[in-house]
Image 1 (tube, rainbow over the protein chains, first blue to last red):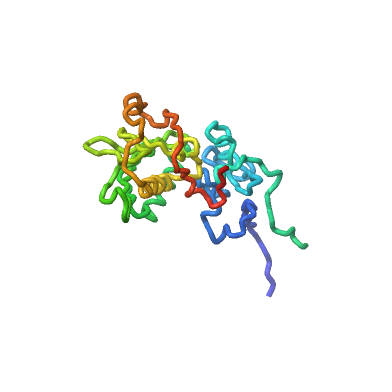
Image 2 (cartoon, rainbow over the protein chains, first blue to last red; image 1 turned 135 degrees about the horizontal axis):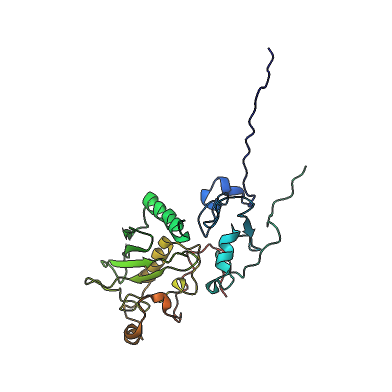
Length: 104
Length: 165
């Protein structure tokens, strides 16, 4: 028997790599604490998820939609503190990740 | 486009309908995303045994970035609980409603915190400046700059990593 492929459709799925390994087990762990929308969705001010509505990581390891966090940090009430732990917000250069790098 | 507050509040409302409120807390009114009301009762032994108070939340369109205006309802014969941080006009002096508000808090978290504020009360009395405050108080408690003293830090509903110097 010979199979001839006439047509194929590619399907891709993406997720932000939040470094939260338990995210799959714990749906709550996968939403922005400010707007409660999943990280893979977009903040309430955006229409399209993805690079236009990125995430932001703090050095304290907490993650939010960037737009949500900036709205909070922009208020005097925030005292420039992380909403989760009230430590002074410092944006991490890159994702805070304690996992060892891939071996390949 | 729906405001930030209505999207977030719709999620909170769904959660309340799906999971119910913690014991002693009941949703009484949430017809819109402007004003919600809950009844609060302290369960078990406390100075407030048998009392049920009505707690009102008012949200502006930028909730949860801006804190909700929270107070006890004092109309139709209702009274605010007698507590050193609760004024007779229903206004509440609690740091999480003011300078310690965080957008990761929720309506239910505020209810639970205020419920435990009542539960841990040792003596039923009004704030010392009650009469003076009530005479001049603004309609919206958020316009008041409360001075937070007292033993209440109200941090318990933040994650365990919360620190305070």
